[in-house]
Figure 1 (cartoon, rainbow, N blue to C red):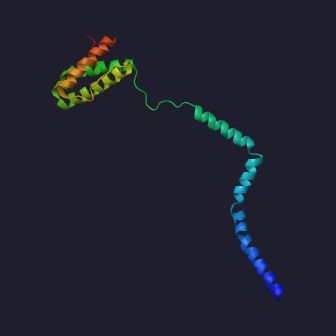
Figure 2 (cartoon, one colour; figure 1 turned 90 degrees about the vertical axis):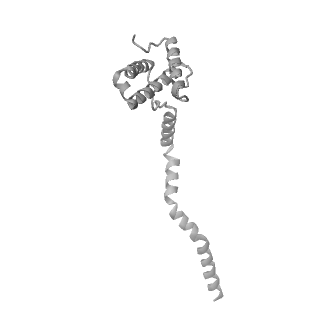
Figure 3 (cartoon, rainbow, N blue to C red; figure 1 turned 120 degrees about the horizontal axis):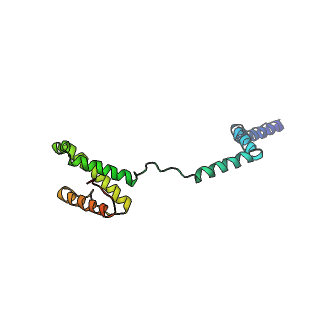
Length: 149
């Protein structure tokens, strides 16, 4: 009878020790199968994936938003200059403010594209008007005709 108890106890201990390993093998069987697949015949797929990843990482993406060219800026500046000097703009303060804001933004873009310094965003009132005239003079000296005189 003692031998049966020893056999049962040994079997129970063996089951207790081996059961977690058996459960882990059953749970992770799909990972083992995937590893076996990638290890044997998956070399070509891995090589193709690496090549695709390398090509995608070296490909240059286009810039998300492009700045307008200097010709577009000059055309916009001429149009906005005509608008800020025309009668409908002079009658409405809101319209004049919007046109001046757009004109100043285009002046900033044009001076930035030519490498000129401007401080239109930091100034208000009469100082901004003086800075606007200064930037217009710099752009004229750089060869841009802002007014079709």
